[in-house]
Length: 148
Image (tube, rainbow, N blue to C red; front, side):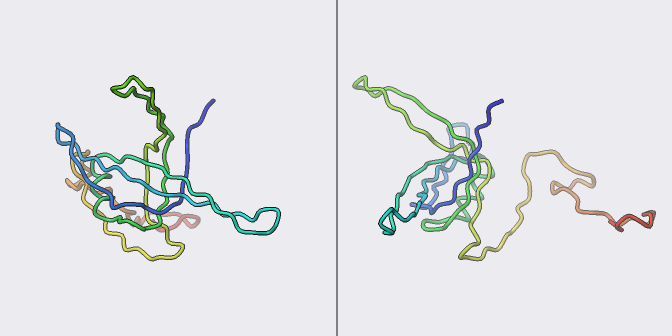
């Protein structure tokens, strides 16, 4: 069994830019830097920075573009994907990007306010709501059960 899953924590190097495909689907590309610090054998601090790019789609893309900005520390969860192409001069090129499944601000040195957005397009829940229902209080719970 093979698994391709990564969690990266880094800082956005530019503001996310929301774009639309020709068919109108929302897309946001992100670039972020991940720093690694360690002490070498002489006890001196060393630092190495890796840069990654990633893509978000649809409502996720809009939410990220509205929420995140350059310099923010983010937590990115996704899959690594390699993309290959050939330049007009015939040179073969390759890049590894993150197909982002989840992204959010890191709360290590910051705070955040979360505002839930209404779903668009998906299935509707009971009562016509597009937001999934929360816990419902029951009156028939047993002595070993919680009342929700």
